Length: 261
Image (cartoon, rainbow, N blue to C red; front, side):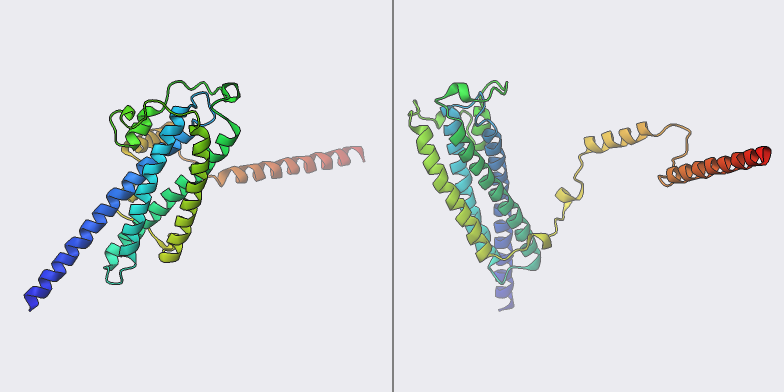
């Protein structure tokens, strides 16, 4: 009987480990897709805006929402499990914070695209802002969709009504994401300010190149052979100078009164 219990415990540990690794992979994928969507959203209303860009935004947005639904179900079921070990619960809470933050960024960018699209129409080319940016963003969208060539996922010819249809669909999807965020907060009570990041990926936010540059910058600021000055020395020197000036004025007045009296 003890052997059976140990076997069950091992299987449970392996299952939780697999669930944690799967959650990390899903959250990492969502972060990359949301970053690509933000890059595409920055081109809305500019000189590179087009029906192709609107279609790329649609495809990237749809993939982000599919990932979000999968992650929400995956993490919600794990965090509501009372038998989840404490260490794995902390890891799941970290993933939950990263996931909810990414979902909020996606919601913000979708609202931005919806509002700007109402102002700048693709059909009215002269109204687009001449930002000076050249080329499209197909490579970014292809990276988000995990395609070597975005043309594989695009229709041969985009309909002229795509812009108006996208506005209606985007408004509905914004409401859906908003409802998902509210539903997540009701199902799982994870206080973000109580979740502490840990591990090597959070320990050193500066890369080796950044650290070297910062060290060189600090060395260049210091003069060779000179002792570092404390910030408190400057007010002291200023106060001493004022006292000396007041003393000299008093001595001068005393001498003038003595001579001319």
